Amino acid sequence: MASTNKTSLGLNMWEASDKPVRQDFINDNKIIDERIAKLNSDKAEASHTHDDRYYTKATQDAVQTTTVNGINCIKCGKIVQINHSQNQTLTAGQWISIGTLPVGYRPQLMALGCFGWNNSSGYIRIDTSGSVNVFVGTATTETLRFTITFIVP
Image (cartoon, rainbow, N blue to C red; front, side, top):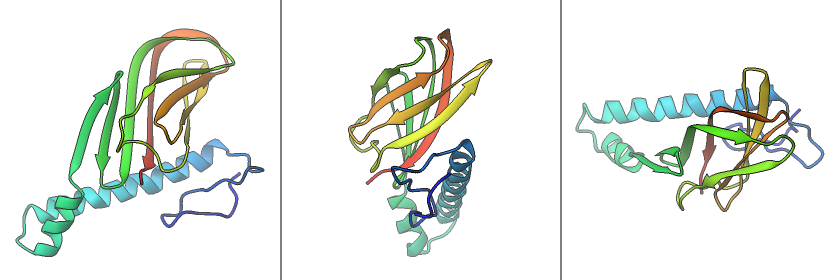
């Protein structure tokens, strides 16, 4: 479970003694999803009005995209979402490097996530240098798919 420490958006900030659970990630992703939906709504509204307040907001929150090492990166303001789908051979019990995110798409704090497919599950870790790694409990060769959303500085 997450500690009572939260970011300004209400996202979990775990202490070293905390034990994150899947529901923590689900709750955080819901908050981020709602924030992105609001930003997209503001942007759509700005495209239909001449009000400078909305135009400026939409300009600042313009969506940027890039792909590196098969990782699709989408950035809107300070929120980044990465998607990855690639056939991988994954060895159980160790962190495996998937690639490195470009500057501007790297998290402010380490980003953690979890994923599952068929009978396997695992974790995603993105450190502040942009290194993307996955960990699985069962060795497998299949298409690895994940999406993770986080805040950038």
